[in-house]
Length: 283
Image (spheres, helix red, strand yellow):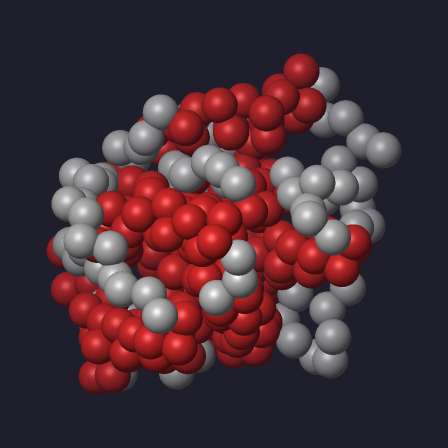
């Protein structure tokens, strides 16, 4: 694809995906796996949110969701550019962010299942966006202090953007929940569909033991370390919106191990079709 794109424009002196690729950093296998998880979360969410462009309920919202999608895509490019340093193509040349985005199969993706869930109506999208933005804000707030300098630099830029995403989603939850009878009904339905996927975000495995906790000078941020802050922020929004946390059973999860819902395959088919039908194509 093209060597220039809108996502290459980075305010200030923030670390760009191109800087990461040019540095030729080779993360350990464990660090690359962690970067893949975070990159896949952002990439899949960006694809979902991009669908709203030209379909949002008002022009300002069309622009807002498009910008949030671009922010998530930018985070994904940085994480995947870094992760790619750990992998090689069959001919021995280094992989790139595009290799990881367009040439992996469904079971090779490491996003949590919430990120791949369908948009549904606008209220369902906002319910998902509230959860992921609060989760990412708490995660990146801590990851910017990682002992891995590249992950820390990516998170330091991303946390400023997801702070805006969090406020955007919170304001829409209030508007919908306290709006009309119909908007409240849709908000409640969107939250009920979203909540079964929340618990998976906080699942942990041996990777966190391998990488170590940022709080102790390690690389990664165990999600359990910020569950209390996540719940407190959600509770504050729900209290103001006169909502309650849905009491719904969790799904089995497994997205971090490549076990996905039936929705990811369709999303990847659409996202990858151009690169796979025209390998090496350029604008």
